[in-house]
Image (cartoon, rainbow, N blue to C red; front, side, top):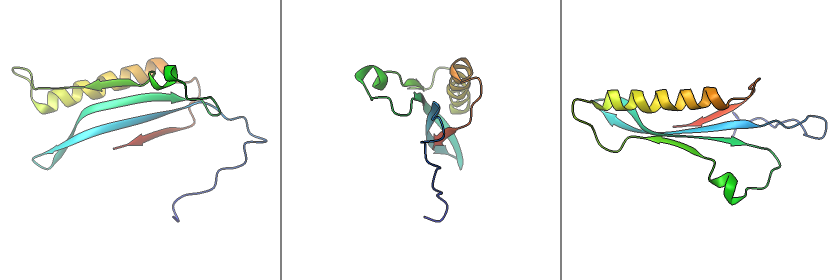
Length: 100
């Protein structure tokens, strides 16, 4: 597609780690709320071992708790995601991919 560009060759550029984030949302009254999120650090060139597959951090809400709205639960999921990302992020982050 026209919006994708070719990345430069990695022969001269050292490939660095990056993060991938994923959000699952639900539409309520024309507003999207996140009910689940995941975060994974990717090491270019590293083999995808069972340990690496288990390194995905997940955040989710299952059922509304008494007195909590979907907005409250969504805010908690996003807050937990951001706090974990801040703890794990690289000193200089060049790339972060999100899917919604």
